[in-house]
Length: 267
Image (cartoon, rainbow, N blue to C red; front, side, top):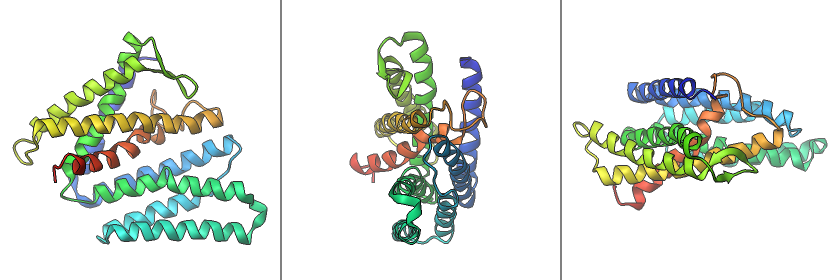
């Protein structure tokens, strides 16, 4: 794997994401909705290859509706209501068409919960004007960890982190990624100093939390790829795979960063 070819696209992805996040509230919402739609198409393809087909349109419709709820500034209660309605419809559909079987229903429920339940949380988080610094910390912290864990693993890696799930990941790479996530938190604190002051230590703690959960999210997505026997969710980005290959860590990191803000008493 060419590290330079991997890091340069990663930097471009971060720039595009931060640009969309900072441009406007609608841009943030519909950027993540678009990523969710592309992820749904990729996941549908992977699940089919693994012999566990899902309803392709269900997660797409779910993500679009969540985007509409955010666009009209409806409360997070409606996010939960939307989830429950879709879960009910999945069960009802399975009852009306028993030929699909319980496995089909459970796979659809699983996909609704992960990754698209997490996508809904990310979209609602992105819709908030107040939490932009936290969103930036989660994105940069997780992607700094992801990129530097690759380098740390290549240079120092000796002990496998989860060989049955992702053979290339090492404990040395994970620690390297965590260290650089903390440094990214310090950098973000300095960048935000002029217009949204956030103390350096809480900022570093939040990026570290985001990086830890992001690595778990990466491994969770690898479980699905392992089941299907594929290397990547897609081939949209050279050396990076598909959208899900980049968003797997974000789907854990962003909610974790928001939770971390409350735990450490920043709000």
